[in-house]
Every structure is written in structure tokens, then in C-alpha cells.
Image 1 (cartoon, rainbow, N blue to C red):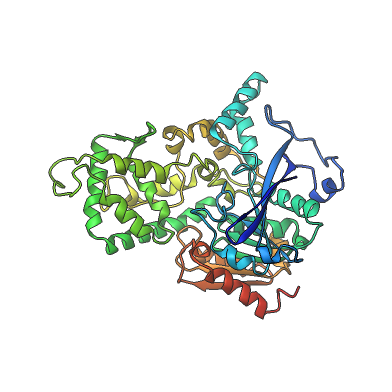
Image 2 (cartoon, rainbow, N blue to C red; image 1 turned 30 degrees about the vertical axis):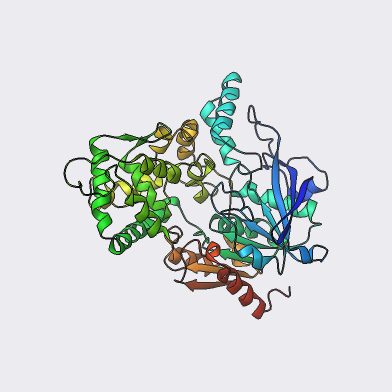
Length: 472
């Protein structure tokens, strides 16, 4: 369904929405596109309070001069998990888009659970819990089952159904950023003939791999990033320590009423994989104290400024995207697996250098912890489901190593050597076992290289062109 059409400077945009099944188990996009709603295998149990179908929202973007041209299709897979597609012309304007529309008609879908697609929020998950209770079902189990339907296997089937029903089944090019790369490899595993060319930026999962393995590799990177920050701004060692010491003595309260603990302060390091994160952190602590010149440091616990508390809340709050932390560890679950059991927390627990009393204080990166679902208002409604999911051993199969090894679709991947979130060594190991994969290793960019300018997309596109892959 076409909802609207309009122009933003330099771009023509159409807003669309289609219905997709909430639960794809037993259904195939190709058969559903032909009108067959018969499920193979056992009928999955319905989720009390949840609809059978949900909305998938997407935008079609092109340059005005190409409005009537028959351009190839490029679909963008956003990072996350739980991340909506970028909004052209906004503060998060995707700078690569201006280059992409020279060659493609670009599709920007909001993955299920976020943006203008059917969203999963704290209020929504609580409503599902009430419906489960009224039906006499386990609240945590029902909520956990709903969250499982928000992962890559369902996302990929949404996109394949979208391709078949709205774009005539034309093979399309994919561009995956971060978690979008995970979706890309899942798509290549499940529907290899659907994709003509894949571009991946900082998002090749380790296949096979586990959450525990990922955090064993990324915690040392978190430490290295923090140490690099302190080398650039050595005066911040004392300022950060003063804030941490003050919080150890008396927990401050953030503007939403949640506590500011040292653990939450450490979450600020989740920005360290981007540029210019060190500068953002430096200027954040620049106004940390009510006594703003900082001359009273070392003379008792300093009083934290209201502006600092608001900034910390804004940078650690995920009201707009609660699935980011909720699904963070489950993107590594595939098929029958060992319980994830809070992998990041387990890794941090035996790394004493990350202790809240250690100085200089180290910051953590993209890692979720149990206390977040006890203290953060937007995450509290997910707490019971999280406990259930952390014990689960059965998830949808996400990757097919045999199909990936036999892959014929060209995969051009930007691997950022210093990536804090997705270990470059693990990425290269996976790519060595993916057919027709072409890694480009660079230390010029951080994890957000695609958003830093047009050069990453241009490099991948030009490499594919010179190798004759675009002619496919």
C-alpha cells in the first residue's frame, strides 16, 4: 500500500506498507506470494494478544532525474538490532544515499519491531504479558516467543516476501551496515537466488560462532579504546574517576528517575566504535560538575551538574529502540545452541580491569547486562522475557554454512581493522569460508565508516564494477 509521496531536497520518496505474517514458521515467502497460506509441519502455537499479521513499512527513494528510469534495486539492511532505516535529510542523514541513487532505486525498510513497522515497545510487551496471563499462559514464555519472532530469520523472510510481491521478484542488490551484514549472510543462506550483489560494511558475523566467543574478542578492544581515549585526553582520567567515585559513594538519579550507577556510566563507551567518539566523551565530561571549572576535584565528592545527568540519560536511554539491548545477545543464536546466559556479563565478571572500583575506569562497549532490565524504565517490561530467553536452547536456524561455502553472489565487504563491535579477525575467518567473498580491510574508518562519508560505498561499488560483478 502506497501511503505518501513527496520530495526532500534532492530526493523523491514514496512511503509504503505491506502486511507480513508475525510467525513465519511453516510458511514460505514464495508460496505466500502466490496466495497459499498452508503451513508445513506443526502449526505454531498462537501468541496471546498478538495479531497474525504485522505491518512492514518501507520507503522507495530515487533522485528526481531518475524518477521514470528503470534502475536496478538496492535494499538497505540497517544495523541494530532493532534499528529503523535512516531518514533522508534528518540529523542522521545517510550520506551514502546521495551516491547510491545515482545508480539505484533504493529501498529503505524498517525492520519488524521498529520504526513505522509494527513496533515492539515496553508498553506493547506488557500488553502481551497481560493477554498471556488472562489466557492462563506463562507470561515470560509468551513474551519470549514474541521476541524470537523479531530476529533475522523472520526479518529475511519479510524482505523476501517484499521483493516477490512489490518488486516483481527482481533480484536486488543489498547493502548491510553492522547487523545488516548478519541479515545479509542469513539472506544468502535462505534465499541465495534473490540477491544479485551484496555490499557489507562492518557486519560479517562469525559462522559458526557464539555470543561468548564474540565478547571474549571484543572486551579487549573495549579496553584498548578506553586507553586510547585517555591517551588523547589524559586530564579526563581524573574527571572520570571523580564522577565514578562520587557515584560509588551516593548514587545519583537521572531525569527519568532511574539511578546513575558506575555500571551505567561505563555504558558511555558504547560510542567508542564511532568517530568522533573521543571528542564527544571529552566534551561530555567537560561539564560534569556543578562547580564547572573543576578546581574542587580531590576535595570531597563533587556535585554532578544537571546538564551532565541529562546528557548521560540521552546517551544511555533506548526508549526509541528498546530492542537494541533486548535482542543484543540473541543475534548470535542459531538453531540448537547452549544457553546464552548473559554472555557479556559473564565475560566482564572475570575481567577485573573492568571492575567499577578499578582506576582508570574502563568503559564497556556494545554489551547488555542484567541490571539494565532492573533499573532502566524502558527495559523493565522485558525483564521476565529476558530471563526466559537467556535459558533457551532452541532458536530459528539463521545461517547455512554449506550454502555460504557454495555462494555465487558477489559479496564485497568492508572490514574495519580496528572495529570495536565486530572483530575483524572473526569477520575475515567467516569470509574465508564464503564463496565469492571479497574483503576490503581498512583502518581508515571506525564501525560507522558507511555513515562517515561516501568513500566506503564508492570503494565497494567501484571494486564490484571493475570485477564485472555489476554486469550480472
